[in-house]
Image 1 (tube, rainbow, N blue to C red):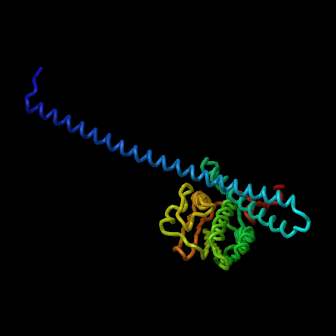
Image 2: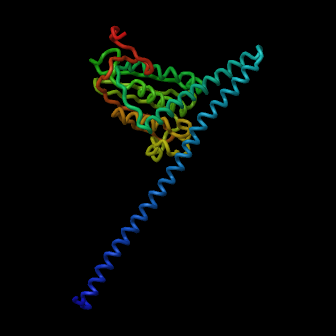
Image 3: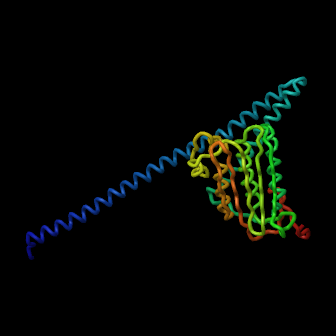
Length: 298
């Protein structure tokens, strides 16, 4: 067995020390990465807990109001009819908002579970958008807010405004935009809803003249687990669920959503959706109903 010379021994020790130092550096880097991941997981859990808490409030509070108001109506006397009408109006408002929140919650749950996919049919866009606006008419009236609806089509497109897309998803996307516009509009303002359509693309613009959205909030507004700062905290009940649902649904439809806004100058959301191949023979007029063109199918 040959003995190593002092020089060779020093070189060997130096090489091993370098290898050890490299391994130690890699372990330190890995440890730092694990710390970052752990912190993000902790933040994620905290955000999800906050999200669940907000969702619970959005369900429990309206139910409590509805039960309380219903109890008061049952005990009301005949001469208190005006008070009863007022309470019925409040019940309608709470039930409407609760139903709207449930739609977003159920869609969000299906998205998380991967149990939702496009269902493309021929949609009467004009009727669908008008139906959504009409459904928010009472809520808008309470805030003394009006609507200005404009629909334009490229010459040559069918006059009845048919467009191949997912009617139910488009209805919820539009509802979320109009709901936010109503919430952030001040009394006396008008919400502008502009829709344009050509042979291969549908564009929907919903503009309010309310508080506006800061540049920082615009970066996180579509994240369902992030809480935004003041001026936008009450969006969709304070948790931004509606806009995160919109983003996910539009991704599914190969569409996009953009914001044009400055604090104090209102906000405009622009949705763009490409036309999809027709998969069924159904025709939808208001998003929740489907008719078949071929009567022999019955």
